[in-house]
Amino acid sequence: MEPNYLILLNFCVGEVVKIKLTEDEKRKSEEYEDFEDFMRKELEDKYQFNLSDCCWMTLDSYRERTCNMMEGGAYA
Image 1 (cartoon, rainbow, N blue to C red):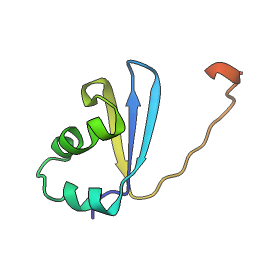
Image 2 (cartoon, rainbow, N blue to C red; image 1 turned 180 degrees about the vertical axis):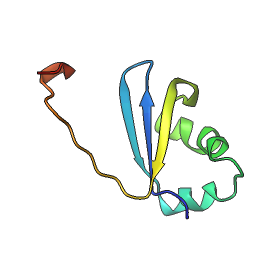
Image 3 (cartoon, rainbow, N blue to C red; image 1 turned 30 degrees about the vertical axis):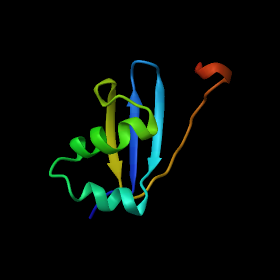
């Protein structure tokens, strides 16, 4: 089963990129033997990230939680 979500942590700029893959993107990903090849060739330009600057994970379902964050990203 192909993932529904791709989450990237861009450690060069301190950015989290959350992508819900389209049905077309999921189909295209199946054509690649390596998911990283798919991300480089199909998603990097489209979503404006550089995979070499990121840690990433794929998920079937997605849930988000933020704890004790103050304005500007500092912890309380």
